[in-house]
Image 1: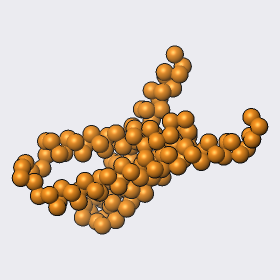
Image 2: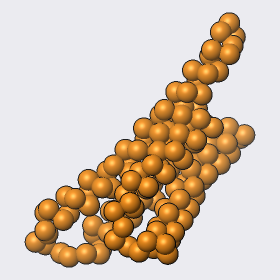
Image 3: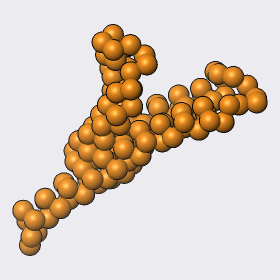
Image 4: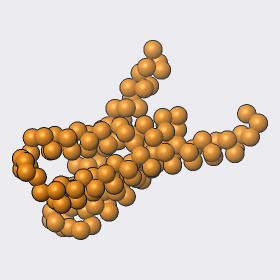
Length: 132
């Protein structure tokens, strides 16, 4: 029972962290720089990579899956946006492709960060206890 509860805590922690991160970063940018700031994407990518690395380090046995749960809300928002918001067909492929590539960099950063954090935690633990 404890193992199942721990799995739920890990998923909920990663999911809520992703939601909070997105809302905080977007709110701060909206308040400080406005919506059209060119710094928005690099800050989001960096934020998700750093938080993914922290989650990967804290939950090393979960590895890249921490990245998935970190961006799960973001992925749901992307699908919802594509299906229910925006213009219907015919789509402006250049605009849509640019947005998808931006979203993909954020998702990739979370996965890479979580994998890297997990790798570092396992590697540091192994080097501290080489015979255990």
